[in-house]
Length: 314
Image (cartoon, rainbow, N blue to C red; front, side):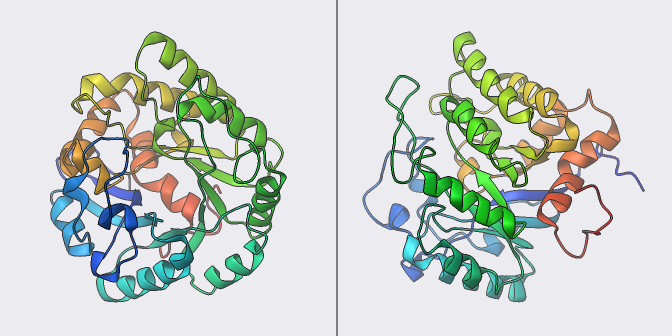
């Protein structure tokens, strides 16, 4: 049965959110001295964020399933985060898939993958390469950058397991990422946060658009419609409509998926307001296309049980 996404309480699969328990001491960025952050002051995030908190934020939205993406815990504790998330799922029913962390250039990557693979909700990794501070800064080279041969080797190890890579780089690195991804066509990839189009000037959007098109030219690359917040601007439908519509037009509705990025996105917009706002932006699409973006594509990409069927598209 097709979902009528015009009703107030929308069904979604949230393909990107975070949990943390600060009493565990795993998240230096939330416990120590504040660090530069994409949305500026993040004092409001420096508290526990657990399934009950998420449920309060998501009130008014019918969340069918969720995908937890690694939350920048201490890198030596990445496997502990995976174990903890599986315990949360047993007690709270979420998350329903896990994107874990391991460094793609780590010489011991295969051992890390084998350890994570013992936990059935793990579907892939997010491993952030080194990036430049701005479009005009020199691009990093060497270990941990996308030019590192070991990074490419790690991508091939992920592909061999049929796991995915969550790609998170600012818009000025999208073309570089596309050149790298072209070398591993068998690896499924999802771009985080709409490619982070932070510069909404015409020149900035042209730069972002060029990178988005380079990525979208490869059919194994998907895009999360998420984190539209800006450092010095309010989150509004009209200010974000253009990048959302362009991203979907570039990738197509069959390769885009909704993601809340909560609690981080909550620094700029409420959960329900975000869902309703994106739904408003997507009214030019068919009901079936909106259902793909809000529900089906995330289920298929992350193979979320019990919804995923092996005879689906991916």
